[in-house]
Image (cartoon, rainbow, N blue to C red; front, top):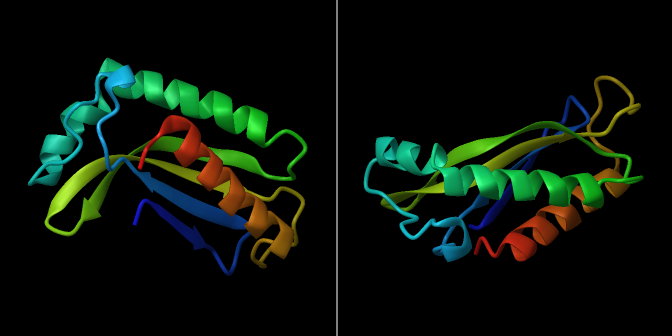
Length: 126
């Protein structure tokens, strides 16, 4: 699964995991799978991956303007994919001003899904 979204039922947050399933030559990320998780670490600290994260931050900043959602965390991830591990982008989005102790509103959930799809498509992650 290239996009995994997990909503927290007790908080207005959603965790989004975007797995990189194909090489990204523009970011010098030619190898995007490993047999052991530790081998993905080298990809996550590469300059190409840092450039990818910078571009992801810019896309998210523009996509979330007036969306009623904000970035709580953005980082690299090691994503299991069957018998291999892949690098990915992991982010947590929050709906500020939502009722404490409740999940995201339906509108915010839809926006999270749309933003995740846009990020995946614009960065050609899968």
